[in-house]
Image 1 (cartoon, rainbow, N blue to C red):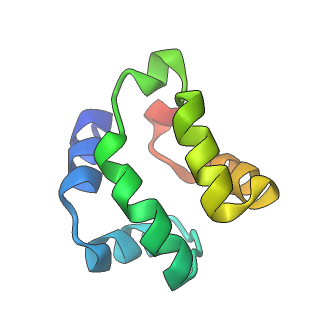
Image 2: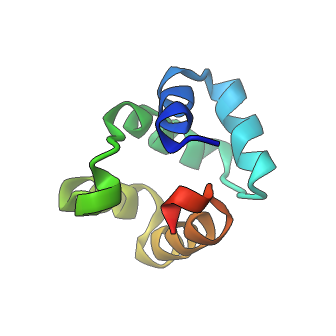
Length: 86
C-alpha cells in the first residue's frame, strides 16, 4: 500500500475501522489504549518517514502506553507495517 494513502486512511478512519486496521497488523491495544492513541492519528505526517516521529508525539505515546509498551508497539509496527516504514 502507498504510505501516503495509508496515512490518509488512518487520519480518516473511525475508531471501529482503526481497530480493524490494528487487527490486520496483529497489533493488540486495549480499548483504553485506543481511546488515548486514536486522537494522535490526526497528527501523523509523511515527514515522519524522513525526520522521525517528533519527541512530543513519542512522549504522548509513552504517557498513554508506558515506555516499555510504546517501544514494543513501535518495533511491532516497524516489523509489520507497510514496506515504506522500513
